[in-house]
Length: 114
Image (cartoon, rainbow, N blue to C red; front, side, top):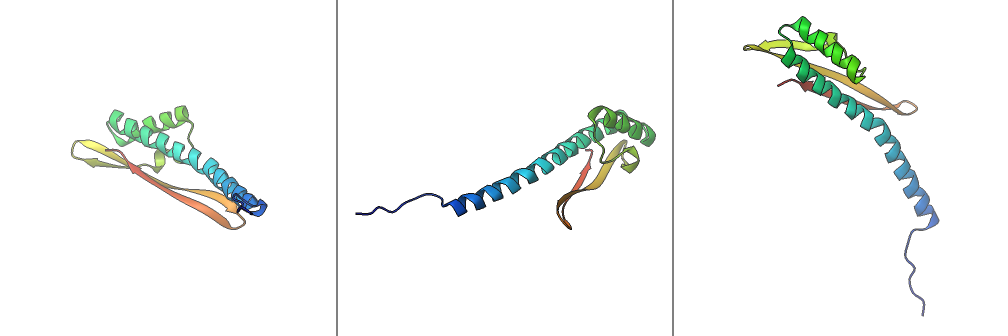
């Protein structure tokens, strides 16, 4: 009696390895970008709480930028509006990750202080 074999064939193993490798490379590009967004969001919240006018908020953000080592935006890219007695700081930027040839992955980040 013959029993049915189970498992991956060599071709299935190669295809699975390629898919896993592509996902690992994408994750290696996306994770630092998400981490940078998190740093920017924290810097925006701190700057909005510490500044009493738009110039102070921008300067506080630029100081945080130098300390946290992110490059995506600067204090000049912030949109600052006054709501009641406090300032709300908004930001938006796009991050392009080159994939292959003319293909890019575009991540659109938006955020604001509360």
